[in-house]
Image 1 (tube, rainbow, N blue to C red):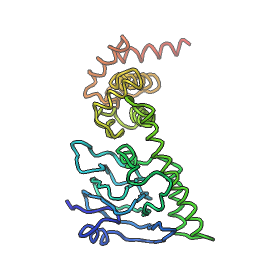
Image 2: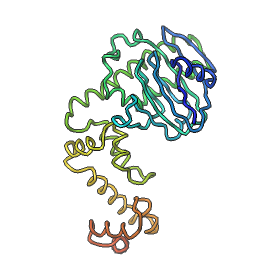
Image 3: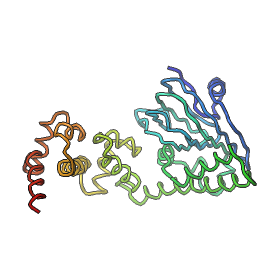
Image 4: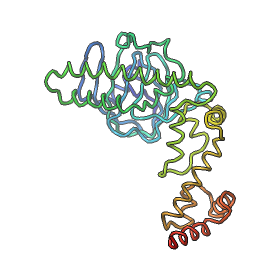
Length: 306
């Protein structure tokens, strides 16, 4: 396993290694912001240490590497690695560590100093733990689309291209500041509970039909907090325990599968995360008073009679 640094801005030996891996396609400097589009072939697997000397926005123009996880410091026991997204904000002089399975990746990298952030409240003093954590997976379609337009303009410049990119980057930095400040405001307004963005992430993951039910640890990583804080905050915000919420969603999904599909019980059991069909039967009967097979039959008979 090779250890390297995934973005420009590292120093010494790591920077030399990055330069050897990084293959730029196009570069442009606009109003103190350095922009690069390029690709890189990471070792498989790869562990990273990132401590840029400038602020960086990194947009993956190809899918983010499999199982990419990052932490904003080097104390994994206190701050476990979190899932990262296709858009990441790396503040200057803040160490990050991470790991992924490696592979090929194409990136837009925007590097800039504090001057570009003047008046936006994103200097070093304005970046607390929450902003650092949500910066690992910036879920802003506006920002993502704006940066994708920047990349396209760099690769295929049109009329007044530099002026267009300057305007787009101004929009991008304002959107970044609003995004991070918005999450900070959520935290202030919901002390003791979970912020709306955390509740949204939990609901989106729990209700996903493409994956089995998540573990508490996975949900805690998605929210950038400890499992204990997650369970306590969820109860305060929703009035019910997180376990109860997960079971409620799983029950609703089970009922839908039983009513709307002919999926075998064994497959439904597996899709819902049960280790054995008998466990599914026991849990369903405890909640509904009948077995899954009886529930399916009753619903089918009711549908025919109606």
